[in-house]
Amino acid sequence: MNKVKKFLYSQKAAPYVFILPFVLTILLFWLFPIGNGVLLSFQDVLKDKWVGFDNYSRLLTDKMFFKAVYNSLKYMIGTLILLIPFPLLFASMLNSKLMKGQGFFKSVYFLPALTSVVVAGTIFRLMFGEMDTSLANQIMELLGKSPIKWLKGEWTGYFALLIVACWRWTGVNILYFLAGLQSIPTDIYEAASIDGASKWQQFIKISFPLVKPTTVYVLTISIYAGLSMFLESFMLWKGNNSPQNIGLTIVGYLYRQGIEKRAMGYACAVGLVLLLVVMVINMIQLIATGTFKKEER
Amino acid sequence: MAAEAIGKSQKRKNKMATIGMVIFFSILAILIIIPVYAIVLASFKPGNHLLQYGLNLNLDVANMTLDNYVLLFTGSHDYWIWFGNSLLLTVITVVLTLLVSSFVAYGFAAYDFKGKNFFFVIVLIILSIPFEVIMLPLYKQISSWGMMDNYAAVVVPFLAHASTIFFFRQYLLGLPKSLIEAGRIDGCTEYGIFFRLIVPIMKPAFSAMAILNGMNAWNNYLWPLLVIRSSEKYTLTIGLNTLINPYGDNYSLLVVGSVFSIIPIFILFICFQRYFIEGMTAGAVKE
Image 1 (cartoon, rainbow over the protein chains, first blue to last red):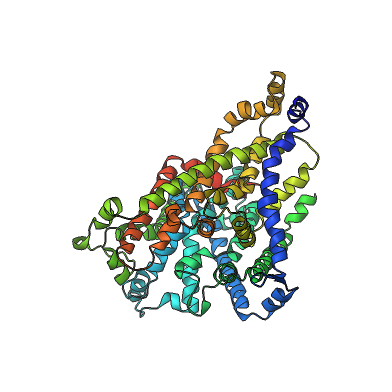
Image 2 (cartoon, helix red, strand yellow):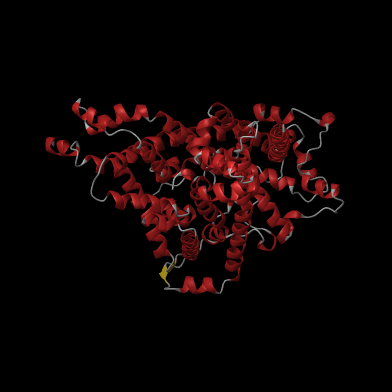
């Protein structure tokens, strides 16, 4: 007994004791489920039998699944266009010495990140209501347009989803970029402005390249979050069923098959395809931005 | 003379730039506040009003009422049970996650051992797997282990939290190794060094991660929705979502309950703003 105790307290064994909780939880709650998910994806769980690649070949002909993939990709691309260049530009404006009240604006922009997706989704569902008196339709009226059934049309629904995303994440992304920009030494800008570089040139030639690690980080998490988006649409359409499935995403489809229809095996196949898509797109992105090369050096 | 004129015009230009930017960012701030303002305003309107007219900014002082607040504080409903459950779960999650994750992070930061890189690469891989991929198999596993409807199922799978471990490790790498050596010379055990010397100096890192994890736990929805069954165990997010069906006083409670669900986080944010932003942006600056 004493020997065991002595061993556990030795400098050799200690690091393993320290990382033991991690190894255990990873085994039990990550690797085990992933392995299980792979096995389940080759089964028909309800009939409890092995079906080989049936679930995967069914996916290839499943129009609804392609609709979900299309919607997720569309959402991801929209968020990449709106939630990276603009926050970067805004952050570098906020970072300017000429800007006043930076702290105040930072706090206000962070506010949406404090709300849960349930509350945020409910707010926006009601703002994009069908009645003439919902905020979105009041704005249409101001613009001289007739009211719209926002959440019933494909592109207006997409617009509403993107508005929710922008509301929630613009501020957070500004903060990310601000943190990145503040790590750039200010004398570089001073030298450039003495050489006659305009603010815009400084942004393109100094801020943009030097803030690249942050940009890659934000890009990576945006791809990840965009492709696995589910709850925003779940809340906006009051559940997983939207008209003509305009709000159906990959995870929404996984939820529908696995939880609502109890087709666990098929749903696991959907999950693994999601994993594959996220990994491939992020891999392409990391190679294209040269992140791997830097690590080799 | 000429230089002075240029200096003056530059100064005016700068002033114009400042004013322009302040106006621009104020507009952006207003756009961001509008939805929050709208829901706070709606909490003073009758619930059926919301169903009938949707959410808008109409200020109808004559019809403003405190009924929703009276309902919230005196009505017969489960709101405060959900609120209490969420509070309890959040506190448990934060305390355990910080304890376990810092323990693990110290192992990674303070020692060189066989397999260290291998295990650390696993931390990084897990950071890049969407939770939704393992959600269903994990759900099946939890149910076959008889852990359904149990708070342990909500908390335990995420105790060794990859991004929290990563953050703590970065923080600990910045500490001098001589501190650990000094502890050993003083006769501390390896674990004594962690609990007596390291934990106290990790306070700033703990604060940042406590707030980030606390916010996530408070707002967590999808996973608790899957594993929690009985209504007396509902968390606030699950409970609020059950109010969405438009019967009875549900919308009154939904709108005022939503406002109240933001308040605890909002108070924390006002008090510990620096830590919020630090915890949130920790990953972004690192290469």
